[in-house]
Image 1: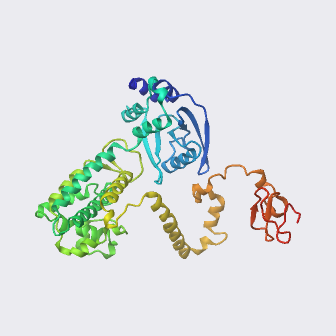
Image 2: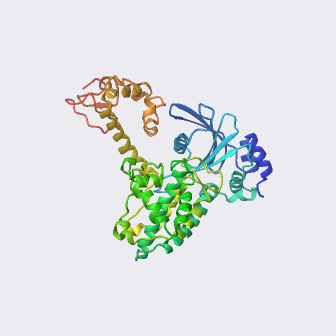
Image 3: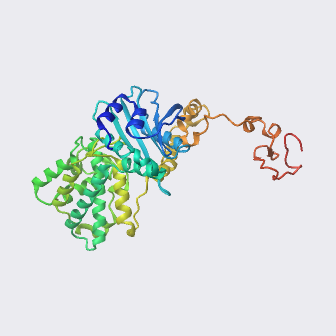
Amino acid sequence: MPLNTTRAQQLLRSFDLTTLFIEELGWDRHSAAVEAVVEGQRYTLVAVAQKRGVVAFTCSPAADGRVPPGPVRREIERYVASMVREHLIIFHDAARAESIWQWVRREAGQPTVPREEPYHRALPGQRLLQRLQGIAFRLDEEADLTLTDVVGRVRSAFDVEAVTRRFYEGFQAEHAAFTAIVTGIDEPETRRWYTSVMLNRLMFTYFVQKKGFLDGDPDYLRSHFVRTRRRGSNRYYQDFLQPLFFEGLARPRAQRSAKVIQLLGEVPYLNGGLFQLHRIEIQYGGRIAVADAAFEGSLNFFDRYRWHLDDRPLHDDSEINPEVLGYIFERYTNTLQKDMGAYYTKEDITGYIARNSIVPTLLDMARATAPQAFSPNGTIWTLLRSDSDRYIYADMRRGTELALPKSVATGIDDPGDARCGIACLPSRMHCLPKSGARWWHDASATRRCGRS
C-alpha cells in the first residue's frame, strides 16, 4: 500500500523516526550504536531500524547544536561505512527541527558520491516524503525481499537529483543549438568542442556573478548583453565576452587597459586556464564568430536556475551548485570529448592534488615571508603542538581515539627490552612483529624480551 504521507509528515515533525520506519515504511527493529570522533568531537549514531542489513542511523548534532557541517558528515559516513556498508544517516540539530538525510552511492572502482536531502519541520517536506515512498515496503514483499532489493530501492529513492537530470537534458539541447550558430570552424567535432569551452566559461562565470564578484552585479552577463545589443546586433561575443575572458578575468587589474576597465568595471583576476586563449581560438583566430542568438538562448536557460557557490544541499529543482556542475562536466566531457583527449577529473583526485601541491606551496611561501613563524618556538609549531588534530587530515587521525593494544602499549618507550614477541634490530628503532614460529632470529643482531 502507498505511504500514508499525512501520518509520515506528522512523525517527521515530531522526529519519531522509529515509528516512521517500523510502522509506516515497513522496516524492522534494530538496536545498535556507533561512535565516531571527527575533529576532536565525538558523534553518537543510534540505529532506528534496518531492512535486510541496510541500517538507518540518527547522528547527534555538532557542539554548537547545529547539524554537522558537510565535511564532518562525510567523515562520519566513512567511519560508519567501515562497519555497516549499506546505511542511511539522518543528521539532526539539537532541537530536532532540522535534519539532513544522507545516502552514499558506491560503485566498484568509482569514488563515493553522497546524496543528501534536507528537511525542516516548519516546511511540508514533499521531496523527502517522495523519497520515503520509494523505501516503503509491503508485507507481501517480505518473503522474497533481499539485501540487493533494498539497496536498489534506496538507491532509486536517493540517488540522482531531479535537478541534475533536468539540467543535463536542457544543457544538451542548449549545446546543440549553440553549436549550430558557431561559424568559422569547419570541423564539426572541433566546433562542438569549442561550444563546450564557451558554455563552461559561462557556467563558471554564473557562479562568480551570483556572489556579486562581477562589478557587484548578480546579473552581470545579462546586463552587458542588453547594453551590447543597444549598440548593434551580434557584438556580444566580440565586443564584450572576449575582453571579459581574455583581458579581464585572465589578467590582474594592473595589466588591463583603461578601456577594458571602463568596459568591465570591477572584476576579479581568476588565475587559471579556463579564461586563457584556447588552442582552438589560437588556431582559428578571428575567423570564429558567434551570433547573439546563441548567447541569448544560453542566458535564458541558465537564468532559470539559482546558482550557489557552496556545497549546500539543494532545496528545489531550480538550484545549481558545483556538485551538479561536476556531474554535467563528467557526463559531457567523458561521453563526448574523450576521443579528443579530454577527461573530467573527479574531486577525489583534484582534492588530493590540491592538498599535496597548493598547501605545501603556500607553506613554502609563508616560510620565505615569515621564517620566524617556523622556528622551534614560532607560531606554526606552537599551533601544531597546542591543537595538532586541527592540522592533521582526518584519515590520518582515524583510530587515535582508541586505546592501544596491550602488546603495543607495554614498553612502548623501550620496545627492545620490554615487548615480548618483538624482534628488534640493534638500533632499536625498527621493530618487526613476530609471526607464529616463523621469524628470523640472529643472536648477534637481535634481542627478544631482553634475552639473546
